[in-house]
Length: 211
Image 1: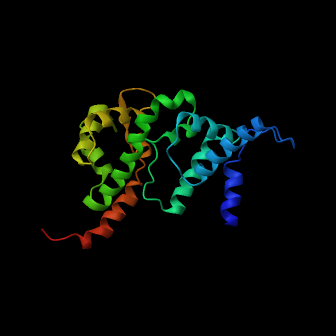
Image 2: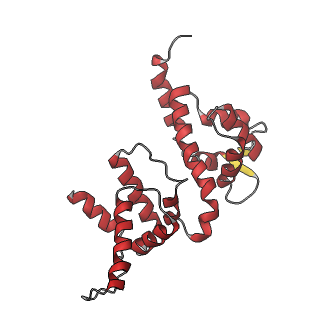
Image 3: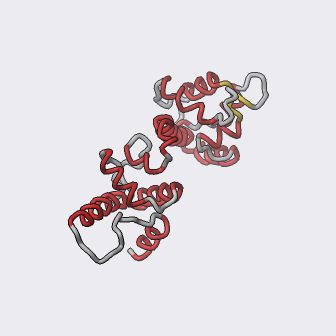
């Protein structure tokens, strides 16, 4: 409990919205209780809020940097071992992004799910996304078009609709060149290094069932 409290204070300082005085008028109390309750739900890894509740949560967390909010929330989910740990498609994702970035949240939600699916595919299907990238790189220039990346991901049978892939892939092309380099592919999709993927495949090879 002591460790969790320390992490909470450092990562997500809370602003209850009060004026810091000793008075207790009804308006001040109401303005304080709402953000406090929203913050408690946040600390409990709640992902679903109404627009009004998100405003109160934003008030409570306004002194915390966006990156620290995200780091705290993700670590809390990891330690609590919640059944659902992907939050990119839920309302709470908005408190981890600036208002200018809210339009990209649907694509980032798909990307979050793609990362998890790719990691599972490495372990369950014994396939290296790095090797597939090389295979789809027809001209050997170290980059793929959006369509090539889409076909690569479809080849891995990750279970995503074409539309979902189309909105997520451009996130790997920050310069908007229409091409995705291998480095950007690996970084954006959260892939382990080529060496680490190969090691995982070698370790899993003896346990693969005979066909």
